[in-house]
Length: 233
Ligand SMILES: Nc1ncnc2c1ncn2[C@@H]1O[C@H](COP(=O)(O)OP(=O)(O)OP(=O)(O)O)[C@@H](O)[C@H]1O
View (tube, helix red, strand yellow):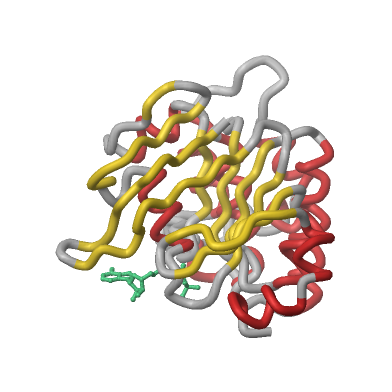
């Protein structure tokens, strides 16, 4: 579904990805694991056109993603929930959601405001609140809801549990599991090993801007050496 082939990317002179090659398959959840600074977020930012790929190819459903505008890439069917969540803090929850719903009209059977509020009833209780008044967990729910309103065929999440209390981590986990069960394809970048491996079908580990390990959740759980070597656990 999404393929990166020998992608080099980085920040100005600083090269972070060195021949990144990875495939996310349709109808599956791919977890991208790795230590801090390994290049996980950089991989996602390059896919979303926030950083230019210096070399290599990125294709989504067989179409090349050229480093274009993030909006155009979202329109191709990629929903992105950045690590920073990036909700509009000066707008209310309702306004944040409406903005996405207006720019990305739902196809038949697609995500509507009513459907995202069913998934996250808490947001329904916060509709008039400003983005600034939301807890970290509520901001994350809003960021996911907003991405869903763009009706993506691939949902890409960068550390959705970062900084959240265990009870909220559990809630986000359960909702992502619901989404997985609808057949939505996902890429999940996570530091939380248990969270990532319980949702994933496929696991890759990134180190120094390359894939160094590929397997299943069961295989990485059973591979103490790889965990120690690549994840420091
Ligand atoms: N805006 C930036 N300018 C320059 N270098 C950056 C920038 N953002 C990240 N880097 C560097 O790129 C490298 C990879 O960072 P990246 O954010 O992709 O790591 P990560 O695997 O997602 O880890 P983390 O869990 O810390 O986010 C790091 O060495 C980091 O210092």
